[in-house]
Figure (cartoon, rainbow, N blue to C red):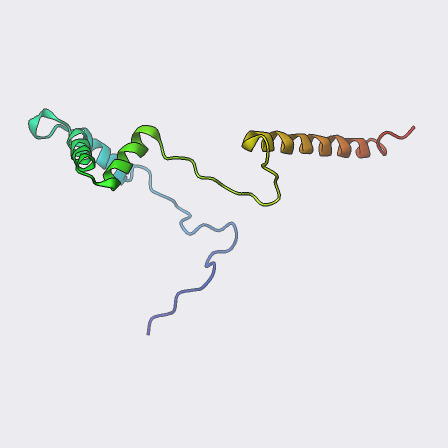
Length: 123
């Protein structure tokens, strides 16, 4: 009977599951694909150029996945909205929130420095 898989985290904190890592000079799939894509194929076009033409034709024919792939490659993927609990993002957008958070951190740093110097602004 096979031994059941360990549940949770099989490695201790700080312990790698692959301590030796990838061996130097190991073949990487992405490197092989780049090499193949740059080689000329039939008609004098590289394999990458032929693949791009196929994707383009599919997008023109209405394939939305092909159209999205082209848009993502040409324009970059659109940013995703992220909500963070506890921060007020109203007014000023994210840059305003960053500025307010930065000001709060600076004020906290000044307060901590004042306490460390002997109690702040006592006279």
